Amino acid sequence: GSPKAADYLSEKYETGDGVPKNDDKAFEYMKRAAFLGSKIAARKILKIAEKKGDKAMEVEYKSKLMEGKEAKDMIDLARDCTDVNKDELTAFWYAMAAQRSDGSKLDKLLNILDEKFEKGEDGIWKRKQS
Image (cartoon, rainbow, N blue to C red; front, side):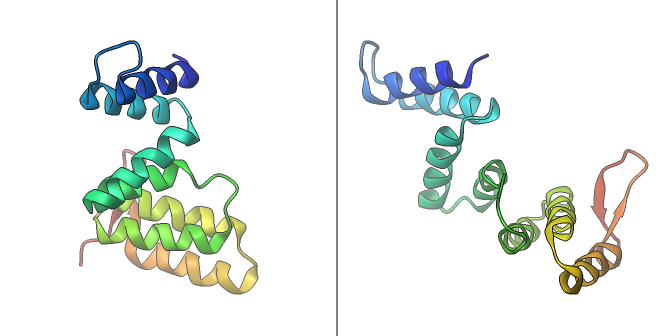
């Protein structure tokens, strides 16, 4: 699928331009576009999530917008992921932040990963049981 085509269909259903207005279909195409890599769709969904107060959805779509961001932004997102119990994403964003960090932050971030998370047999990061 094409992210541009999904963006286009989302907009058409959102505005009712040439098709019957349908917010549910618009949102489905918006999610499809974001999944296919559309930053425009991811930003729209992020705004919807923020408006609804849906922290889990917010974290998911913030993740799609992290490319090219600084370590600080990734740490903030990792903390948001922790708040909504998205352990694999939390560990992933701490690890990504560690890769982009200078030496002073790197050790701290790696310690957070070692203290709080472990990689399961399935390769998925999980919170360590207390």
